[in-house]
Image 1 (cartoon, protein in one colour):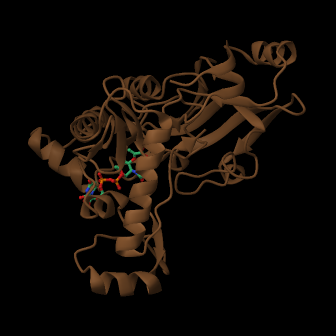
Image 2 (cartoon, helix red, strand yellow):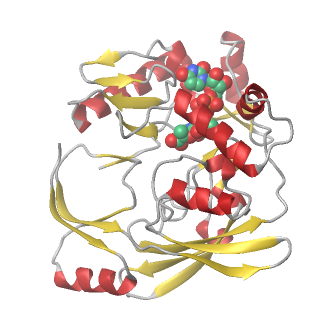
Length: 319
Ligand code: EPU
C-alpha cells in the first residue's frame, strides 16, 4: 500500500476553499472515487476527496430534462436515479465505477455511448484563482477517454457539478451486440431503459471484475487507433484481427484481443494478473504493489508491440 502525506475531503466549494488555504502542500491530487488510478509510490502532497452531493432538475420540457449532479455523487447511483425518474440516456453507462465528477475528465464510455453524447455542461473551481468556471461540451474538448482536463487544463480545476441533457422519450441504444444478445437471453423484445440498464449490469458483472472483490481499475489500456494505411499491412499478416472504423483514415483495434493473442489473458505474475474474462483489465489478487502492476503492464505493451507493431497506451492514471 502507498501513503499520502495529507488527506482531506470536502462537501462544498466553501469547504474546498478553506481546505486549500488551511493546508500547506507542494502537490495536489483530487480524487473522485479513485477507481481509475494506479498508485506506484507514496504521494508527498495533499489528496482531496470530492464529496459534493446533489441532484437537481435545472430545466424541463415535454421532451427533455437537464439534470445537475454534485461531482461527488457515485456514478452508478446517479444513473439509477435518472432511470427511476424515466430520464433516458445514461442507461448504457450503468455500473461504471467512480464518481460523477470524474466522468467528464475521461469521457467515460461503454456499450455504444459516451458521456459526451448526453453531456450539457459542468462547473469547476479554478484552483489558481478561486473562481468558478462553466464549461460546455465543446470547451471540454471530448475525445475517446479524453478531455481538456486530462490535457492542457490538467491539475487546474476541481469539477464541482456536472449537468446532463436527458430524454423523456427514450431512443433505446442496443446497437452494441452484447446488449442485444443479453436482452434476448432475458426474453425481452421491447426493452425499457431499465431493461437496458439490467442487461448492461449483467454483461459487466460477467466480464469485469468487481473492484470491491478484486483490485482493478477497469480497462488498463485504451483501444489503439491505427492509421488505415498501417492497419492494412498488419491485417494482411493477421487477417483474424478485429477492428472498427472510426474515421475515413483510422480504425480502432480492440486491445483486449491483442493482449489475449499475445498470450496474457488469465496470466498471473505473483499477485498481479490479467483478468481471465477480459484481457484489457489488470487485477491485483491481494498484495501486488503498484510497481508490480505497472511492470506487468509494460511487459504487455512491449510484447504487443513486438508481436503486432501496435503501441497500446495506458488508460488509467498512474501516480
Ligand atoms: N476481446 C478479446 N479478448 C479479450 C477482451 C476483448 O478478444 O480478452 C475482443 C472481444 O471479443 C470484442 C472486442 O475485443 O470483439 C471488444 O471487447 P469488449 O466489447 O469487451 O470491449 P473492449 O473494447 O474490450 C471497451 C471499453 C470498456 C467498455 C467496453 C464495452 C475501452 C478502453 N474499454 O472495452 O470500458 O466497458 O468497451 O463498451 O475502450 C473502461 O474504460 O474501464 C471500460 C471497462
